[in-house]
Length: 447
Image (cartoon, rainbow, N blue to C red):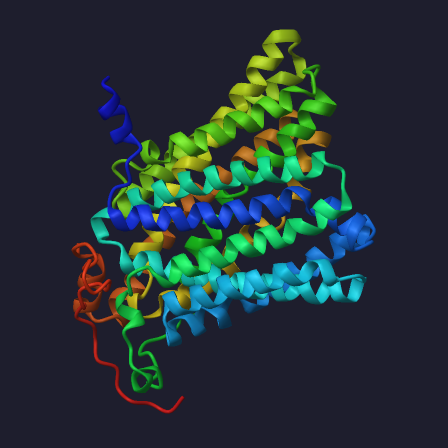
């Protein structure tokens, strides 16, 4: 393979995808740097106990859960790009304040504010990328962005590790300020992105109620995203259960954990584009789900076998179990991007993103405690039950996607659905806006 062909494999699908990927890298660089040193920062600088840190994060997670749908509605009303920029700027401001927090009360208030602002950004980012990317480019562009995100987190981990190596409180104080600076650059990058169709609404149009029932009345969407949450419990296997299993139930050396996470990082940087190839609609996304679930089940079967193996056989099998669960992550990512594009009401993408966050959280929040108990206490039977959960979810998501599609066909005009699935051209480089799309004209209604 020539050098140009090799470099071509790492070229973004479009200029717009490249700009979005740069934003993903900036976000992950800032977030990853702070997260790497956050435990030390909160305990040594803020002066919290480990229990207080955990409680604050739990309360912040509850706040984000409750804020998901309202934040999504704000995105629909004011436009995804504007709300995304507001969120990025707000997060930068929050990080800049962290060094001045000195007690548990201030920590909880900050953590809650951070998570709520983050919920706004998550809904805005999801709605914007679906809105702005051409339909035939969405999945491969999101895959490229996912690779950039993992590159950013890797660089952030390195930056955070360097900061920790100094063993200096002054350097730790600077960690959130570094993240704040990166997030300000990120916010500036967001403001320079092209406007999507839903950013073009006038103040008068924003006062008009968006027609049609909301996502909380779409049982197919709520079920589909709930099952996606169940599938995302592969991260529990990856980050919690397999490492604990390695330490407590096998003779593998603990240093193997570093190699496992390095393998996952490399795969998530270089393979998302390959895993997303051919995923373009609901039927191909369901095929990707089946592949993801197959990898998940294989990982469970391989890992349970390591209880009775020794030496290099154990090391090889644990590594293979980690590789296969990473395969589950890659194929699930590709599928979830397609579901988002195909099964949302195009007029309410922010609200649908918020509802998805709500139901996906319900689908996975139980897994750390349940999976850990099953694997470490029930052994082989526990691993088989974990695999069975994924098999049941795989079967159930097929009718749930059909239910979601039928709901849209009943409540969304056919021309709106057709337009949402149609391909569109690149952003206009002169005006830095996207070509306008035909959408249903909403009827005035009091808000």
